[in-house]
Length: 295
Image (cartoon, rainbow, N blue to C red; front, top):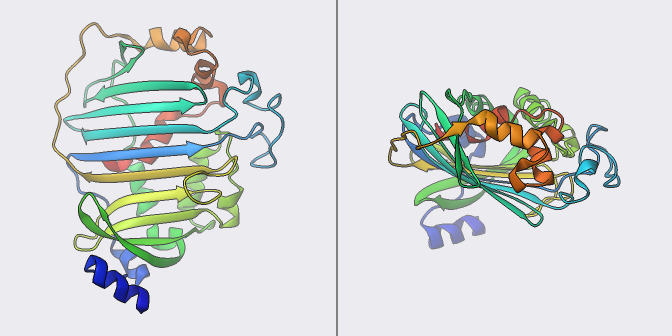
């Protein structure tokens, strides 16, 4: 009661009395243009082949070929705006050790383009990401989040939200879906199976719309432990954007040939990673799962 009184005095609102009800009433952002901000941070294990076991030396496992370059923290930061029907813009950056790789992408219902090292490449068709896939995950919030607690009342882009926190239930079907999306990454997913992965959602107090979700599979705070993954996604209303084809775009095969051929356009070992060094990771499916709400 003291905490709730303090919050009410400072922020004009108190903690939710029934966090389970907040989760039951929570819903996805409405269809139409939105803006999203995504940050994903992880420190790879040297050997992910044992299903999420102990870390080994850099000479073993899928990261061994990278010569230790990517043995530290890797961060993906991206912002999107628009909707899948009329157009989406994406600006992203991958940071891995001394390497910073900026990426820009544009997509509409007919085609998609990505810019790398100042060159535009054309996919020749829409991305084909299932933007609704995240709906299945968030639609199971009442059963996905175990022992939910109202931990704060916080603003997300000026929208007052209840922050509900708990752990991810290892028995939920959405947990299996998340594990499938991440299984080819060099991550320790034992926290998911053990029910120790942490999750928080921010739900609008008035409209009950989910505005932010954060998942941490290991560690605490802003720096996950080795093998751990921290994902933070925010989605808010935004203006629509119109996407047109960039001039002089090259076929995407030119980019893939460079990456898979080892040259990687000056990207070095990071090209090997993006080109399949992680054992067949489907980047399209992973992107759909993490950023689907932006559609």
